[in-house]
Length: 393
Image (cartoon, rainbow, N blue to C red):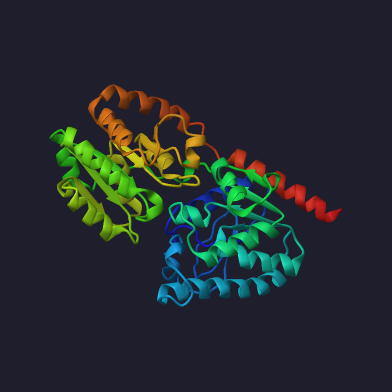
């Protein structure tokens, strides 16, 4: 299995999904060598992690923002392509030294290495698509080099796994891949990986404001065009006009941060919007816990784990219909990302009526208790066996 990140060296949900999926696969008997392109020492009892020793994780922290990179454009751009190319070379040695039956690779940064592994070993290649370039570019074409890497990999792969029906249809439409080559396997949330709240909430100002009748509406994620935060702030302006005691907490980092801060100021809502950098650990958990409502307004979200993480901390969500999770999560509010008036109305209704909050929380808790990666793992294991047997024949 080829990946680009695993917690704690992750800058988003890709590493979390890979880790939790691998655990469920191992419970079904899969033996996994998970290869990552950096130096580390974390090991897990359900899989063997192979560190390809190419670069420090900090060098590759911007892997989701490929639309802003082009070869030779900047130090970061050079590092991204340099690490990706070196990863491909490192795989050659690993293929020779490792015994395996299937190659399973996650997202574009691993695709060329995976193709090389397939070429050297003759083993079946499964490409797992958590997002495609147009997702990361907010619905636009994005980086042409990345687009071509995806086209090449998806065309040659023996099987493609998409994290949602939404993603499957985009792969068919944008890359001309036959639909019957793609299997949908939704992401989930392994509750065993979640940590409970401890001690007082660290967002003390927000705690004080809530005592005075304020509501907190939160977004946690990368501050990039894909995430639809410009529309979210415009909806926030409409909310503040009707419900001035609403605070919008935006947590994360990304290339749009300065633009979003300036937008909040120009909309006249700067006093109602708090920007906080990327968070881990207790401050990440406390952000969900302090929130009355979590909003995921993404322009294009192949799946989106954060509403499930919010649910664990008893926080309901308003999610974009243009997301994979909208296919599986029922106990939430839903809106088209572009409909800022509807988004504002949904938020106003939620912060105004306690009955709506209680009803959503009750239904969400029941839905959360049924979550499992097991169905996804069974789908993948069946796919492994199908292609392994085909090679044997």
